[in-house]
Length: 390
Ligand SMILES: Cc1cc2nc3c(=O)[nH]c(=O)nc-3n(C[C@H](O)[C@H](O)[C@H](O)COP(=O)(O)OP(=O)(O)OC[C@H]3O[C@@H](n4cnc5c(N)ncnc54)[C@H](O)[C@@H]3O)c2cc1C
Image (cartoon, rainbow, N blue to C red; front, top):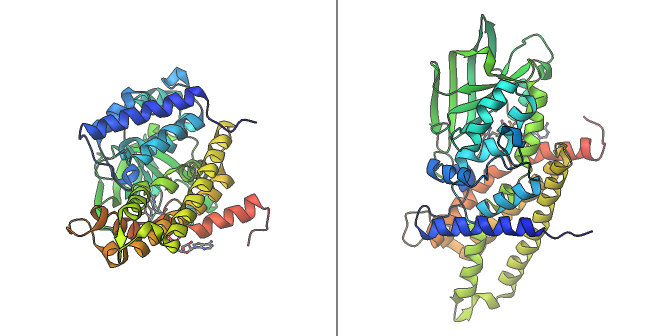
């Protein structure tokens, strides 16, 4: 068995690197932490689309290239390595496009997939509600049938990028009497419909990347429903496997990993090279071991996707592992930097323009977003190991 990349994959990786390095050299953007989820740059997304790197795995008949999920992972790994501002297309490319492909009508596929691949349609995730996070099936946002439309009332929370997105992938209750898992449907809702409003949420890092989104008697045409009525919960569970299975969990703060290694190589402490400190060396070596293991887990997930099944258990393993890695990375950076580490962007003494404090604070949320670590361990225990549900 050959675990190496094919020549074609190596060429693809080099093309992506050349493209990204060229963009940085031209000063089009600066590498950032969490840029895959917080870096909204429509012009960048357009340029990525022109190279055909959105919807890489989708069928040719809709404009895709039918390439493998390993190929896609090669592209996203490089986007993350360079901290590229890819948020405009990240969610559609990763999971929402796939949902349209698997469950959408022919008309929806022909309408939305080409726009996503052209880098023109950005869609946000409308799952969580104030009282429904881990127990998503308990969501209360209602979609009530009224003639040729559904009327939506309710609230979503933690919606990524709601000031940029053009549509929201909304999960709402369409049957109030059915058991909670069997009364939810999926809708692709334009954000400019009357009755939709948002309030930005400022997170612990001071970033305004999230939003509460409110729906007040919003009339959504019936043709906006994706898939079968009342099957939305099963669709979202499948989508979440794709959401959890990517390299962003491991490499969202790659810039910090890079920076702390360079810092250790170049810094002296009390007249002695920091790189000679045994504890510091071991901590960095330990992180490198964990990073390599994480990378293998991610490629395993992509292999499962290439087999054509949602990587539910594999993605729960890799996400649970990778968020713990990112938290250890941030902790280690703080231990090495000492009090300087807490200085935030804007302070002239903040190392790496505040990267360490951003990652340290941001990393608290990594083990919550897209499913908390406890929920992932429940999935591994029940679906992976076959242990009984409680
Ligand atoms: C930075 C960030 C970005 C996000 N982005 C989005 C987004 O774009 N779109 C979106 O829809 N949502 C988003 N979310 C929401 C995220 O999906 C939820 O926060 C997550 O599902 C947890 O839900 P909750 O916050 O309601 O916590 P709760 O579900 O209330 O859980 C609280 C605690 O209880 C534990 N717990 C709950 N149930 C169980 C159980 N059965 N067994 C063991 N432990 C349990 C959890 O592990 C957690 O530690 C985001 C969250 C964060 C932090």
